[in-house]
Image (cartoon, rainbow, N blue to C red; front, side, top):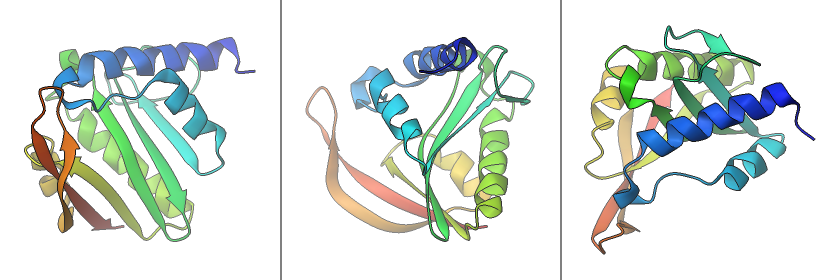
Length: 156
């Protein structure tokens, strides 16, 4: 069973998720999906406060990154910053922490997949991610529109 501190951090992650993802795109995960990923040895969560400080057991979550490690690589599954704290560099801070953690686990490349048209592409471009693949009409919005998925990679 998770400790009360871990539950409080997860509560903060779920608040950011609810505020940070537009429901039209069906990108937010459920609490069970997050806890199931974190129950795996390959699942990793980074949380930061509004100052970009890493949180472990307490504090107000302003952003998070959830990833999955594999030999030599790491996949960013979700990243979100509370809209009240956007444009403060927290997304870049989360990616820097993820890259450092992934390198410490032996990772050489970071991967991510996003829907076409996601404004986060500006951040990924700035960090140095490059597009390496496309899945046609992979995502479907709530209103029924089909969107391509774009895969990005970054050598770390």
